[in-house]
Length: 122
Image (cartoon, rainbow, N blue to C red; front, side, top):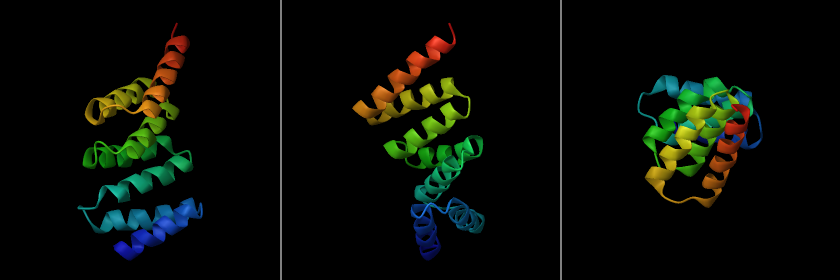
């Protein structure tokens, strides 16, 4: 699994989203017990392909496995928001900040999105 994951990361870094996705899905089929990085990288690869809805379960799993990882949470936040679920995105941001504490960058993103969400719904 380690060699396959390394190959997937290499493909992701080269922006070969389809190739990385293929390897990561194969890894997930072969094991129920995978590290959060596998789900996180697959979620990121799907996000880069604008497959927001499909990325969400992988990123959510990764966030459950590693609840204070800011990168995972931000990716989930963006997929939820870009996938048409702004309220869920805001909830994810609040969940992360509650568990992880202060993150000026995350708080800034969250406040900007909350403001935009309010403007759209008034």
